[in-house]
Image 1: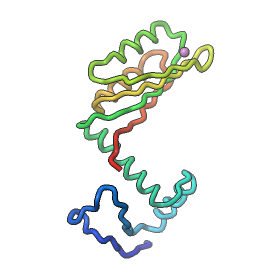
Image 2: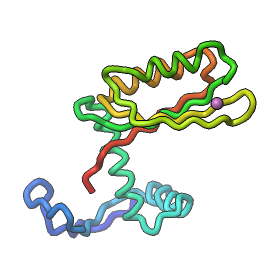
Image 3: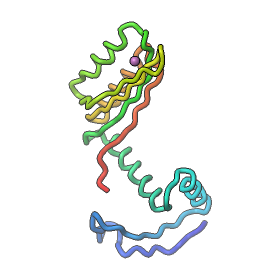
Image 4: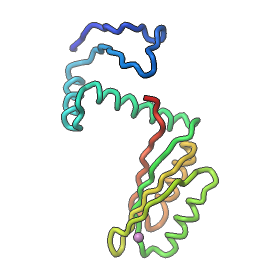
Amino acid sequence: MVSSTVTTTHMIGIDMPAKDELERISISLPGTLLQEMDKRVVRQGYSSRSELIRDLIRERLVEEKWEGDVEQVVGVLTICFDHHQRGLSDKLADLQHNKYVNVFCSTHIHMDHHNCLETIILKGRPNEIEKLSITLGGLKGVKFARLTRASIIED
Ligand code: NI
């Protein structure tokens, strides 16, 4: 185990840093975890360990918003479907006229003679977005569906 001394000037929960201020902290990590982290820094093109850790924390904050199902969030649903599936385009459009989920916009491209790709930007409560995405993804003729979960993050 590799350890280092904690030198933070703020005691967590007692002296909160200003919102826009960058604070320097030290953390202790087992060597294996540090190696894994450094591999990610290189592989994912991060400029520093700090940048990776900031992104991991933000990712977790977004996940918590989705799990909490309290705040409105934004998601991007990507679907690929069979252009020749009878009635599918109408069903996809009908379902997007959902009273609980706002569809901001969608982009449709014709990938080839048979296949279409659509990205749909959705806003609403997490559970409602998940439900709609599962319904759209489960329609006959939809071959691929993936929801990207996003939300506003205070820096
Ligand atoms: Ni098409």
